[in-house]
Structures are given as C-alpha cells and as structure tokens.
Length: 507
Image (cartoon, rainbow, N blue to C red; front, top):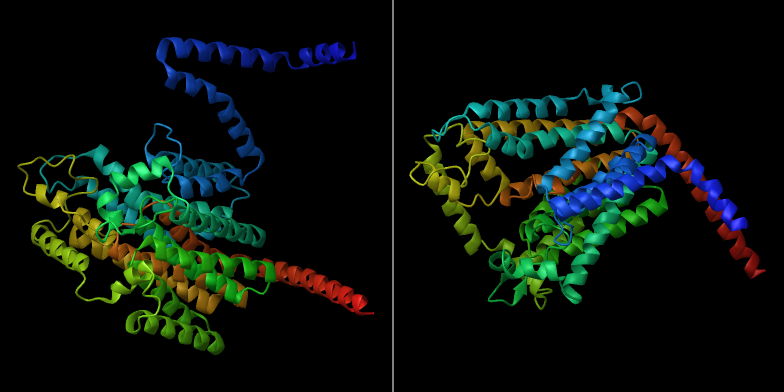
C-alpha cells in the first residue's frame, strides 16, 4: 500500500512533465514512420537540448568546458557523426558563449578585450571581408563560398579571442583550464600509445587504409605516422610540440607542487608523443618555443639550464646516431637533411604557385577552390596544387597582399604579448604561464609555415585563445598573488604535518 501511495502522490506533481514527455514520444514515433530515422533522432534530442539550455544558464562555465572537449575531439575518427559540418558544433558553442556574455554584460569583463590583439584580429577579419569582392577567377561574387572560407580563416580567430578572455577571468579558472588542457593532451598521448602498441579502431584503420594511406604509411609500408585523436599526423605532432613547450614552461616556473608536477608530466608526455607522429616539423616548432622562452625567462639560471639542455638535444639529433635503432627517431633526425625529397617537392609547388600569383596580388579569393573553379579557368591549376602549409594556403587565397597583412598582424600580436609578459607581469609564476602561452603560439605559427595545421581543430582555439589570455593576466595579477599565497600556505601545512608524522614514527 505504501508503494501505491508514493506512486499516486508523485503522479499529480509531475503530470505536466509526464504529459510533455508522452507527447514527445508520440511525435518521435510519428516522425520515424513518416520521415525516417534522422527526424526521429532530432525529436529524441529535444530533451537533451532543453537540459543543455538549463545547464548553460545555471552553470556559466558549463558550455566553455563542453567547448574544450568538443574542440579537442571533433576531428577524432571515433567522434560520432551529427550530420553537420565538422566546424558547426564548435562554432555554435563559441557563439552561444559570446551571446551569454553579452546577455550578462554587467558581470562580463569586456574591458579586458580592449587590447592590440583585438585590433589586429578585427583588421584581419575586415581584410578577409573585403575579399568577398575579389573576382580574380571571373566567377562573380561568391558570397556562400567566401563565408565558408572567411569563417575558418578569420572569424574563428575572433571567436577564440572573445571566448577565452571573457571566461577565464580568475586564478582558479586559469588553473582549472591548464588542468583540463593538460588532461586532454595526456589522453592524446595515451591514445597514440594505444594506437602504436594495441592497434587502431575500425574507424581509424578504415581512414588509414584509404584517405591517409599515401601520407601516413611511408618508407615502403614499414613506418606508420600515428595521429591519435586528431585529423592527421601533422596536426597531432605540431600540436603536441607546442603543448609540450607550454607545459614544460608552466611546470618549471610554478611554485605549487601539485600543479608543477602535473604540468611537467603533461609536457613530457606531449613531447614524447611528437615522435610517433613522424612529423619532422614538430622538432623545429619545439625548438622555436624554447628559444623564445630563453629570452622571456628573465632568469639567468633558467635561461642557462634550458639553453644547455636545448643545445645537447639538438646536437644529439643533428650530429650523432643516438637512438637510431628507433624508426621514429630516425624519421625525426631526417628533418636536418637538406636534401629531403618532401621539402624539395614543396619548393617546386611554391615556385609554380608564385608564377600564377604574379597576376593575382589579391589571390584567387577566400573560399575559392577546386570545387568552384571551372576546368578552363586560368587559375584552375592553382586551385589544385597542394598548399602544404597554412601560410601558402593564405597566400593562394589572398595573394601577396593578404599574406603580408596576415604576417604583420600576427607579428604585432606576438610581440605585444611578449612585451606584456616581459614588462607588465611581476609574478614569476604568472609570468611563466604567460611565457608558456607565447612560446606555444610561436611554435604553432612555425608549424603553420610548414604544414596546413594553424586553423585546424583543436589548434586555433587553443593557441589563439591562449595568446589572448596573456593580455588578461595583468588584470588579475593581484588575485593571483593572493591565490598563490593561499595555496603555498596549504602546501606548507601539509608538508609540516607529513614531517611531524615521520618524526613521530621514528620515536
């Protein structure tokens, strides 16, 4: 009887929700019968969407952490297909976050967005917007194609800037972000270990044996370039190199031991993961980040030790045979070979591209490519040559004017961020975080010079968003000092208690 009373007591209070769910169930069945499985699935997702909206307004950071996960795994071969373009879910979450900040404008830190990075990104977005009028291929104004290209080439940079600078506003959020990023990189490192030692999933193996066969199974089939949860090995290797630079610097400079050790482990794992990728550019990306840190460290002791380790590692790869028994190390060592065949092919492609672009100083147009350039068009060949690198891709689509403008805006952003780290941040730990973000940015830019990885997921959000954080750090440095002082006090107390327990055992 007691059970029955509980049931009848519950039903009247939940009558509205039960009726709504029943109607949704009937609608789902109707859509399945009349329109098929896709419509059925959409109706079934409505409750999840409602729960997401509730969670978004109740917990402001929920969508941000969801974005971090989606951005990192959206290119994973095992990521479930949602029937939308790869970038759609990522972009939707970014727009939702910006909209939420505008709605809650009184609490949002919009004043922190007033910096040189925003000016440069807006300038680049304005240039790409003007490219809608570029008709070098005599195809007329292609608004749809232009918007598709401009979203990836310019607008997503702005999204990354706003999302990071508006939501990572306190020391606790900053540390939580580093932990989330580090955890994602650790998973990527684990997954590449799993691919190498246990094997690929069916989806990964299917891609490797078809689309990725030519570029990922090399040396006569004796060497596989592993790609972990990323789109390809180049994106994976360069991301891991830039991540390794950042986290090793975070670890070296952090005073809170649990954060220090976590960052060092994440950095070491990320550095190891560059080798299974077989992406030789990643070595130079790592070197570039370390060289910049030597300048930014403001510490003779750190600069000396890092320089010595850096020189020894370069010497080992370039002038010795240490580790040559490992195929991945041999692959990385070939990066120092000036007669490398793949580098020569890229030089040949660039020379051919240059000939075509003499008559197209604004490029062939943003969003214009193989799909929309007719076979008899003068620039048809240009649209089919593999760009090999992000910089060459920008050069092809925006011309010498566009790539020059992009390089200038990028250099100004990086130099200003480094200036902020060097002169505006006083805390050594916070300066270390800023340095790591700057060094990761230059590492990924070098990767973009050699491979088409700069605008790929998850690189754009991680590294452009990360650079925007450098400009936000001075705004909460006082809060950081208080937070660090509190954490160090807790750390000291734990060490004191631990020491007392050891002494008690001896007695």
